Amino acid sequence: MTVLSACQEAAVELNQTEPTVLFAATDKFAREMRVQANKSAVAIAKAYDWQRLTTRATITGDSSTTAFALPADYDRMALKTNLSSNSSNIDLVKIVDLDQWDYFQNHVTPTAPGYWIILGGQIQINPAPATGVIHSYYYISNYVATGKTAFTADADVFLLPERLLTLSIIWRWRAMKRMEYAEDMRNFEIAMAEETAKDKGSRVLVKGPMRVPYGTTTAYPRPLGS
Image 1 (tube, rainbow, N blue to C red):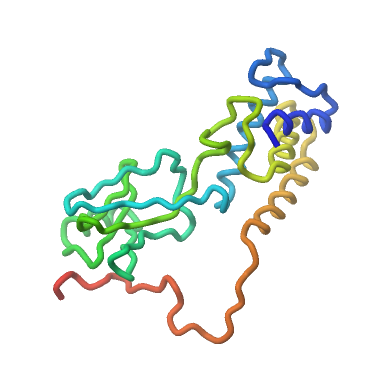
Image 2 (image 1 turned 90 degrees about the horizontal axis):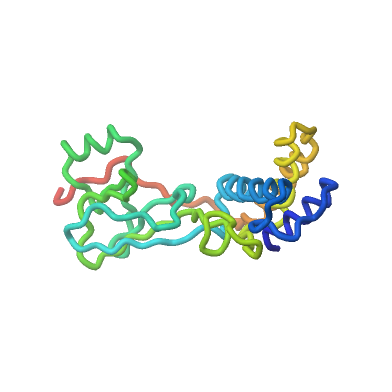
């Protein structure tokens, strides 16, 4: 479904004339539709860690670089993301706040295999990854259409479930007009819950207790050489 077709479906529900174009249109309703479409797309993308927007990124060490640029389409880290390494089975330690980062920088010997934080729009790693060592992580892209952070053309296709876009446009347009929109918002919320449930996929059942649950680490890995 294109952004134009989503707006046309919304127009029918709103008892308005279906727009034939959006981004070349000058009439008020078409302009309102494209504004609400972009607001809806961004809100839907940010509301949940969609598998369709989850992307793997890698960092390659050179023994000296400690600050690495985030991907161009980076929006946020996926839930529970950590940096793993191809040279160790222990993830890098994620620093939880700036005070901890500052303390580690000033007082603590670098740990094995290291620790990291996002600071200044970059991923900071200490110590610098050795040459050829690759760290990988998953993040959520900010693209809502192919290669785009916003709709700019009538033929742009929403990357997430299309019905969510239409339902969101409907309640947001009515809210903008100071009309009753509670039922429309509820319809959207129900659809959102259904789509996020499907996006998670089926759960894997594991029999018997796990000796060490995945993701369990010591509070502070021991210093190098100890």
